[in-house]
Length: 440
Image (cartoon, rainbow, N blue to C red; front, side):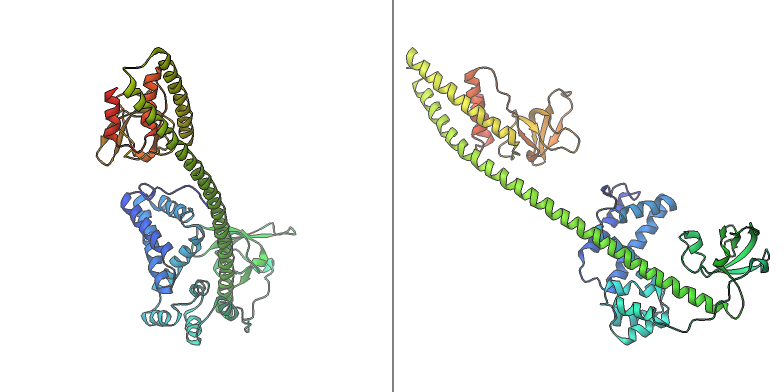
């Protein structure tokens, strides 16, 4: 399964088709009933998207884009449902109106595993099964595998009895594993030449009558003589063999995809549990810092009041004590703010203001980790940021939640105190903070 995310703006050749594909996927993943009628409708939408892909991109690239979409993580374990929906839609739309009505009225709520097998059956067998009543995948398989009187098959031919140009029927005893050869099962072929007739393992060069350019090589035991009395019986037997193999192959594929789907779900659950544990630890650390911050705010407020009220009456001895107290508090605040910076807590619009120094913590354009200064607020759309070391004419627009404080303190202690005061009092309005900076 391809884990590359799908870009719906470009993947399908144009944004409108990408939007249609996204809407179809949403509908497909959201419905739970999965009735035949719903599957036929969604299958028709998927088929339409595939057709439009080939028209937009060309046949080869369109089929490739559509297949990549089905194999993406967005479909996950539901890919087999999408393929089943498309197959059921094509089969259903090829039925007569009367048979369509019979199928919808009687088989609309059959399981998907049972419905998937209907396209591989003849209309007579479908009618018989539906009129019998509710069917399951197992009951349909039982009908398919029910022993019947098999037609007499021509004995294996002797290569000495063959002549170039003779018409044969390709009917191997089992699937060959070669897709081109397996597609010929039950078809008439023309013998072109007997290769290595005198060896222990002679082979035949054959041509598909319906596609003269397709020339293949097979073994003598994989073809039989064509005779009017047995051709129809042989074709019926081979068609039934194809149906059984197709049903078994679909069932195996479904089980594999369900296994992959539930394995992915289990990994997601484990990942969510780990994320929840990290989030709980982060909240505990944040609450602890907020409690410490409240104590520091009270100390800072008391010290500022004391400095303001006694600034004109300070004696040299007392001043030394005041400065020592202030230096101690600045050290505590600095350590506190370093802890905040380490957590990289995202900011809010109420905390930010023009002139604040910040750090980018999340950015799709690759600017995460850069620092800069807030230059302007663009209504409710975000904040213009001028990044350090980048041309001042280049400004980036960010949401407040993409930013955190960048704590680069000035040199002088009195400036440090006022600078630190802003970051500790985060809940203050931006106007109050600006006023405190202007007063400095």
